[in-house]
Length: 425
Image 1 (cartoon, helix red, strand yellow):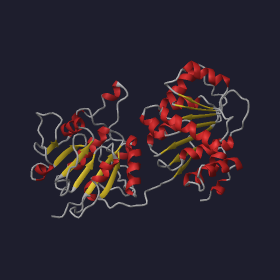
Image 2: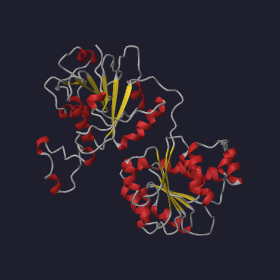
Image 3: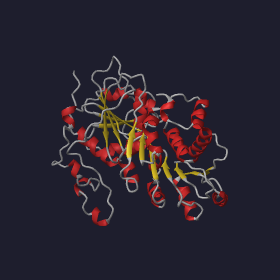
């Protein structure tokens, strides 16, 4: 789409052309007019889709330059590196030397930052924790904020700064709220819904042009680690279907803990390159392939390089690997594979990594409804709640949510056993 369609000011249009921007990104086409119009907005798009440039343009088009000492725009970012990038983007796109933008950083002097804020600043970019600390020192005036922006919301959530974001947002009064993330999930809405419940959601999918040939891929979105264990135990209960399985985790310690949490008969589960030297396990996956009684091999990416999974009908990715190339490596189809099914478990925190994998694959991984009889783990909030835990499962299993009860209609959800086809012999 042509840049002219964005209806930028002459100055911004000229600056964008000088920077090499001649066409608009899809997120800019869909979101910029709403931002300029003052709407609250949630922008969902992958890395590199143009989210930062979108809100920078929107802010610059709305910003009225006055001698007001209090900042008009607050941008929250997850770390100092991101703060520097955002400040540079504002200066580069605006080309305005009189625009005063300030980054608040934990490595800086708070006294110097407060002195600079008192002298006057247009835009403040900060981590939530630093912004809150300066605010509590009466150095950050939020009374004149017009636009409140959350950048890389998924990373802010991953770092556990949701409460701080809510406190800052609710201290600003009536302002325009903008939140940008690579994924939309429950934790995002738990953070922002208290102050922007009716926001417009703009979502853009940008997948790679090349679609890779892979195994049959499936994705289960689960709320937490313990529910992952519950789900794996539930699926593996069907030993006729899941007769030979490789389960990938990230660390050898997790592999060892998972092996202790599986409800399997003695000899059915083993580890590749176990964490402890005196622990039972194997050093070669080919040994596992020749062990008829052993049907589950747990493999940690840590300490394991290339693992030959050929001939294994089911591959589980219990955790999203830190290196997406690992995931792709184990899911590329080959002539030696026959109806291999790859099943991935991901929490909200891991979904951004799933998005990156999907970009590289050039396609979406189909999301499968959770089985109706899956028990969802819910952390207890009081001693009274703890007494309600299911003691028959060691206190780690809790009463199912309504959405997972037998009376809840998933509208087409089928049990895992019905969706798994045993490999042809």
